[in-house]
Image (cartoon, rainbow, N blue to C red; front, side, top):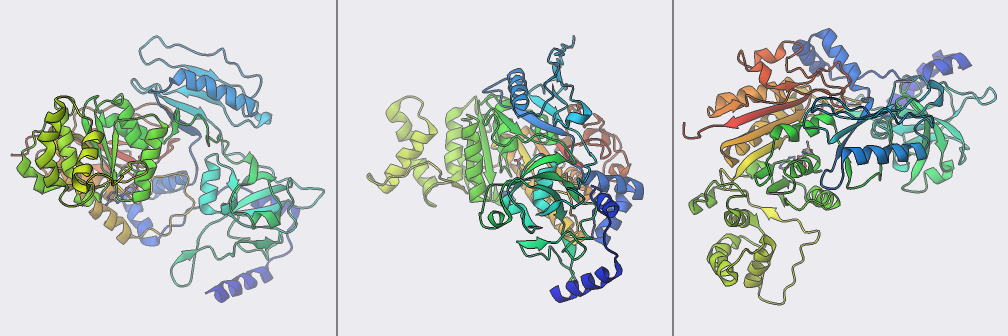
Length: 598
Ligand SMILES: C[S@@+](CC[C@H](N)C(=O)[O-])C[C@H]1O[C@@H](n2cnc3c(N)ncnc32)[C@H](O)[C@@H]1O
């Protein structure tokens, strides 16, 4: 395969003349084109129309010009965060020093908006244009930091010589486009003799189709670039130039160490700030539609809420904060390490109402517990029953946990004659089972769950694993096939069927995906309504505004109507792919659960 590629490259090289300065300048631009699997492309063109899909495809290659921050209102306020960010950005030279801070405007209505306008001149090349609060009522805990782009980065010649070059991986480039630096693991190749402090041009090597039908980057890490057509990916990376920076280590160092900043980006095609290590625990960088998903779930303090595919915990923590850390948020994920990540995030944010479990969401209903006749009361009204249900669902140390708990629950409670915390109950049960002397610590431990009793939750969020074809920026899309899209849809339906069983009558399910694939969004809604007759699309949902969102619930292309009955189409939130979104094709559907006996 490698031989074949080298042969093609050699032929191409023989046709090209030496590069002139003008050619070089022309090729250093950002104009990527997504390559789709032809059958997938045809499917999307059928769904959206050729023009509309082409706009979607182009928009996917660009990051949003907004960074969206969710403020942890348990610890801070949007105003305090905005002031702190302003100071930090000024210190870092990311804001023009002539910034006008005086323009904090109060709107007369309850949707108060405070904007700190910053006047960065075009020449100053500063990253931040403005910091503002979300204007949508009830969402003023969201702060937008506006960057800018795309910018044409002039390719600088050093005394007539081309700049030294660095080629990074596609994943690294996608992060850089959103404000990150180039880290060592992301570097694939660089020019010879790069020294610390050298200016370097940064381009991306995107996966190319191989003769065997697969995709890959046929480049050995550490490749030396000559700055000529003989370089690997010379032609393929035309239009994939993401900016310039300063090498933070020599070429030798770059490929010797395993971590650290490799290139400090100075000129970016898209200027967005990095939030790495910034106001940890106080803010969380999150795509706006993700924040809206938690908002649409509308969790209330004291309720019991299940987040079915929770890691890394962005929406889980948003839900817990909306509940003012009162009640119970059960966050499950099938990955052990990811569950640890949720625990870490919750601790960092100072949230106490989140309980995490390792669980395959396809097996989240535990029918065995039905015999216990657990009442479908919410957490605030019956704390002890919630603890009981919790413990029944949890496989702490073995399969006899349930019996053990049933046998001892009353005894344990009676001994105290007062409220006993869940942790204390667990500790006592472990002691009963294992005898004194065996030490179980909870730190860093991931508990497995066997599932939950039907009707255990007031609200369930199913943020289903999906094709993620709505996330931006994206520089590669070739790997998705019709079969992979179909398998996501099937998987999601099975998960949805579990969610339906776990919500109590009168409860709410929110289903979300970040994909442009109608099979994973509109089709799921049709399936849900046809299969579970007691479900209805929630009649009230927030009309969303703010930067990057249209506020419209109408389908721009008419495709949604193929799946939804007349009248239903306005009940599903849908975002306009042509606008400046941080996620394209994010989809949220909110269902009310009626009487399950119908
Ligand atoms: C879209 S991400 C969830 C993002 C998360 N809701 C957030 O906002 O931070 C999907 C998650 O689903 C998890 N997942 C995939 N299949 C699962 C399954 N069968 N059971 C539980 N979790 C699953 C993955 O490990 C992944 O963390």
